[in-house]
Amino acid sequence: MPLVEIRHLSKTFPWGESWFDGAARGEVRAVDDVSLDIETGETLGLVGESGSGKSTLGRLILRLVEPSSGSIVFEGRDWLAADRGEMRRVRRDMQIIFQDPFASLDPRMRVEDVVSEPLIIHEQSTRAERRARTAELLHAVGLDPSALQRFPHEFSGGQRQRIGIARALALRPKFVVADEPVSALDVSVAAQIVNLLAQLQRQFGLTYLFISHSMPLVRYLATRIAVMYRGRIVEIGSAQQITEDPQHPYTRSLLEATPGIEA
Image (cartoon, rainbow, N blue to C red; front, side):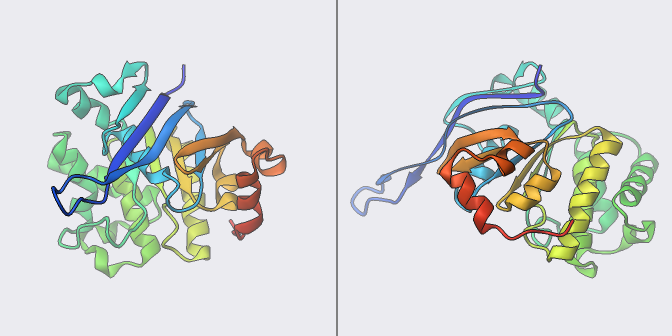
């Protein structure tokens, strides 16, 4: 059984506003009838240009945005039918790594508090246990425990993203949406973060939805690749098949247009 099963998922946003009555002028279908499975332990790469609906799809799966229609099953359970209590329990198993390490961390909080905040929200462990868990996570992402009492602005972009990754792993999730996690970083730092994600997947048995606009980057990390265009999945297959024998013209254009990355 797949870890995540998505069927006919769609999300429509209102567009514009009428001057006369304030009503929406129309609708934009950001995600349009998407169906796919994500297997336990795999990295499914989701690739497409900006505006293709990739990030919206990732947020729909986590219910950070509510879908307009369709179904999501997580570990055999109907995720969209979950009540508040079940949502709270399931959210421990589903986390996100955000795109911008400069905007995703509270600048007023020390690193220890940033990383341990999910443990506090979910009322897990004592203060001493939280501190030990935070130090363990910082070590896992390649940061020294001396970082615990420092603030996010004292770190580089790559280090901030490592802090964000540590925070996402605090509750020992099973499924992580990595939403363009290296697009704000330069190439050499991005390569380090991608290698770190691969290492953490092996270490903690994670399942990833890795969202990116870069086909070479997705090819390096992903088990399978789904190509998204104008809210739809136009092609899905193994990383080798998608990159060596693409069937859709849009997939071929991505392969031709995206620069490589040394990873």
